[in-house]
Image (tube, rainbow, N blue to C red; front, side, top):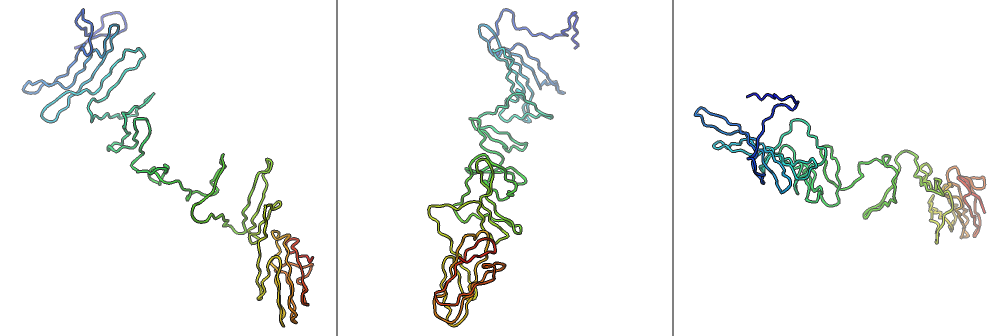
Length: 338
């Protein structure tokens, strides 16, 4: 059957279905039906598809239309039509049309190419985005929250991370993060642990640990732990505190222990050697007093360690009972007698 337009306009040929004249359309009234039948050898006709136009909604002033496309389904013994695509208009003239693809609960719509949606994809409450095998990849609740990603079973407080194959949940960790990958933050930082120690270390030869602070808008180095000087602490400014007790530095050599502050030595009949600690920049200002407290014939040789000098010499000797010497570290490798 060929439809040919004999009019002089450019609207083309038309096939028009008109409801009974004089009757207003009521809800669900059919306007027209196109059916597609097959005919077997016994001349048994079976409908395989149809298109139905009907009134979707009607009131006193206007009517909305509905167009349904049906295709046949068969279980091997019977064939029945099911709506595959339904286009349903609304009363509002806003250009929106409800589109339903597949009316059955197990319907599947396959798009061979790309699917482009210019507004939203809306799922029923508890719906999910599912891969081809039927496994949910993203699951949502009725409030629009994502309740599950993939097949992982997360615990409270865990984060999404990539394990090299899949995105899975896991506790926050920086075990695989290099320190030189850390960037400047924009808030206060607290470094703490409830168990064990916090260790800050350098691993390259003779490297330092440096503490920088901001003083009036300028970065200054407040403290350096000198890796090339036995970890000596170098402070830029004074050390302040409500109570300050100098740490006791103990140096043992040849059976004589020299402590920061005061050391009493008994010689008996043997000469003794008291070796001073290494004079470093961190030790500047420290004082040591060594005293011979007995009347034995032995003397005490107070000796600088390494390249250090005591008033320009390598050592100073105490001969008599109750004689003492007090040394102060003036600079690296420099001891002064006071």
